[in-house]
Structures are given as structure tokens and as C-alpha cells.
Length: 243
Image (tube, rainbow, N blue to C red; front, side, top):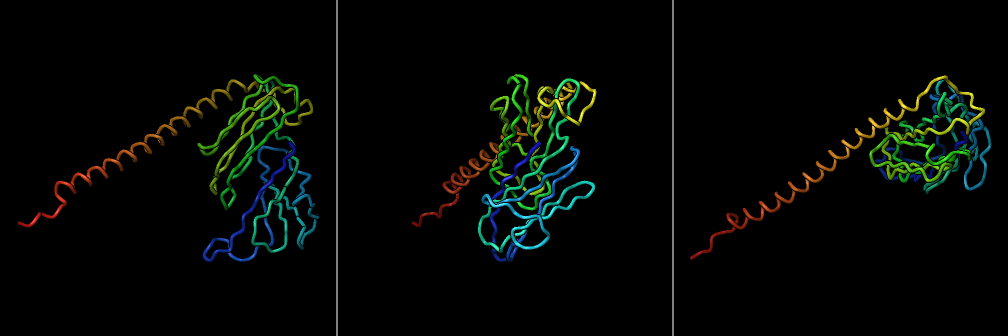
């Protein structure tokens, strides 16, 4: 899976904020859970490639441990918005089961220390599938949505993702699209995936219903409180007229 992440960072220098002072570097952790490795890491900005090095503006370095790949890139001090592009290749992200191929991936992990606004994920599959052979789900905040635009394009959107939360996507499609898959097993999983996702969707619908009920109840209580205040003021809150 070839990944291209484009993120616009808004740097702030207000007193008392969590990140005061000048910014000269950023780092991002790419977790290795659910894959067989990450390679080909590159960083760029406005079409200009950063150079692999361990110091100086316009450089980036990659550090790999047993469970993640940490990418750090450096730039001139800034007090403005900057858009960086991070690209890499994930090996074995797709599991080729006996009946279907499956991608189960956290597009935005929960380790971010700042919120993410206007999150959009565009996932492109190889050609060769029919629309009824592709199924997709999203996991994360209830405001997230997933859409199968075509057999080759699936999108996930989210208006805002708070720190410590994640946006995860799940996708099943014909295994013939990935004939060279290296992550394989001899299991039929489609029925269990459908049952699992149906249960999670039902739970999400219940949570949405509770949220709507609480919101509507709060509005009713507020309106009733205002009306009661007005009525009590009319009946008892006025000063008596003098004779």
C-alpha cells in the first residue's frame, strides 16, 4: 500500500499555549501493527524534497524500533501554516484470505497530541472489481462517514478528530486484485466480518439515537425553564403598585 499524507500544520505562539516558542521540527510515528514493514519514507514541502540527514533545515531522518517507524523532519522557524507531504510504502497491509482480501488500517492513529480538522482519506484500489464486490466501513467518532464512490475509490471523511482518538477504515474486495499478496491465510472470513460490522453499526446507531435524545431533551428543558421564568415573573415578580 503506497501512502501519501498531506497535513497542514497551523503553528501558534500565544502565551500560555501548550507549544510556545519557535518550531523547527516535527515527528510522526508510523506504527507497524497490522503490516510486515514500512519502507520508502520521503518528506517534501511545496514540491521540494527534503534530504535524508540528521540535522539542519530541509532534512529528515527515520528511526525504526520493534513496533514503529519514527519520522522526524526539520525546517526553518515558522509562525505560519505549513503543508508537509509524507509518503511511504506499507508491506503486507492487505490480508488475502481464502474468500476475500481485507484491508484493516488506522489512517489517523490515536498518538496525535493536537486535533485534526477536515480529515479526508482517499483509497484507490486496482481495477478489476465490480461495485457489489467492494464493501467498506469506518471506525472512530460518530461524525465520520465512509463512501464507496466507485470500485476503485473509497473515501472516509471526518470534520474534526480530537487528540487521542483515531480514524480507522476496513475494506473487503476480491483477492484477485492482489495476486502477489504476501500476507495470506487459509480462512473464510467474509461472513464473520459482516456480522461483526453489523453489530458495531447497530451500537453506533444506538449511540447516535441517545445523543439526539439528550440534545432534544436539553432544548426542551431549556425552553421550559425560560417559559417558567417568564410566567413566575408575571405572577409574582412585579412590585405592587402603590395606592
